Image (cartoon, rainbow, N blue to C red; front, side, top):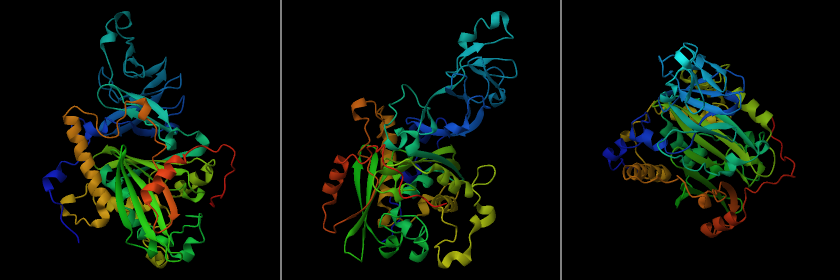
Length: 444
């Protein structure tokens, strides 16, 4: 039975706003965040202006190949550094020639006596960066950065992973909440079985029509050190077995789910981070990985490119009503093509720039969303108490995420699910197979 949110005051405390000085901003800044693709900042290329959590920043790659992330406005006279010159080991402002390195140190003040006798006192705001998984990640929080999480999907060799970015015009939190709502798969992303068979969505014996047969699956949660593990069990009428899907909420703005890697079977995962640009827009940073074969990146890139305009923005938007083809709705549930990310962006943007959660009527299928909100509220309390929030690791011995399972498996109906998960953890499903050729091939 649907019910109204029990505590509107607590909903108001959710970390929707993430600008500097906000509780939500303080929370997200305690974690490494992917802020750009590595391909956005090529060596010798122009600096990249970007906004992250309502901060205006500039990203550049120095001559030594390292990236720097600085405040956009020069600390001298507030000129825009994205027009600057990348030279002499840093980024030089074109107004008066002040030069800053990747740490924000002022190396030169050429218009000042002695080249700037007091330049050591100047510090441009800067954030520590690392490159992992084809992306630039930044730690924008206070104090010492935590360990970078050793996610297999991020740390794998280049040929086993693929990174992509979407721009979404809604609050980051509702974008990520869509990832931990497994029931919508039976509707939003559904196609007629005969239509599905013409494509390669799931070539592992599990087809999309199963999600349409059992549209009210059994859901359960497990608390884990990175957030939540969500179990979705659907009945398979043909054989009486169960389709088990395992997905994850990754604190505070990420997920690990089955995505474009699913056709290649067990041993892969897609991880998303919904990174705020400001309070009403965000980047959905996607990382697709499979441990058993190199990914067909050219085909994957072509599929994404088909959904983008010449500026890299989604073609489907409110101005063209997301290019919905109502004539196609007899074979496609929403009539918006076959790109699941495009479906997701449409639905979360349709909720409004910032969803009014007080108007929701939550149901039993929303258990992961309810629990994730509680984890976020607890994380805010932890920060206020001076504790690291859930998912922040500083112990190298714990920094191993091979047990972050993402599964789509057929099991016996009476199987002990927790015992099965322990077995799968012990199998080390993300161990790389460096010899196996890529099968099956994705069709264009």
